[in-house]
Image 1 (cartoon, rainbow, N blue to C red):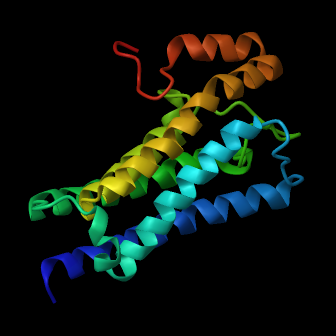
Image 2 (image 1 turned 30 degrees about the horizontal axis):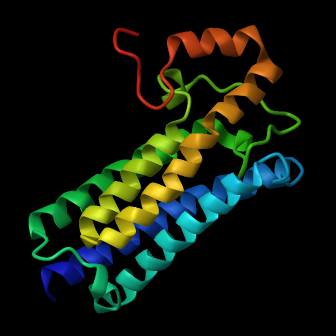
Length: 199
């Protein structure tokens, strides 16, 4: 088996693990509370996000099944060392993803909503950053882009992640409305996507 085939196989295992963790906690949250409506998310934001996500996940699936299917958008002479680095980055994100979901627990939502029994989570990675899902997701996407060495995957990931980052202020406005000064104080001591230096 050649090195790229080994990397692909390991990438499948990492991705399957990440989706299993995410799916478990999302299903648990939906069982604990009513299903969430997407009506509060701006239509253009949702379309932008879905277009990017479909492009990225579709391209990722094609590359994992048979890389030549995505050969037309491959970056020429992509170094094997970068592919291994990407796999390492993805594997490194798995415990962080579990850490994040296990602390967020049933408060996870698929869109810009707040659950009826929503609690302000400030433990685990939330002690340092307010949106670790976006941070860890970006690192996971980056790892896969390094594995695949594909400009189309890079472009679609940028579109999907940009949509998430654009909706962050709307999410924070809803949390401010729900939790008031408690969330304001939390914003002062944490970074949005990266920890605040000196905190």
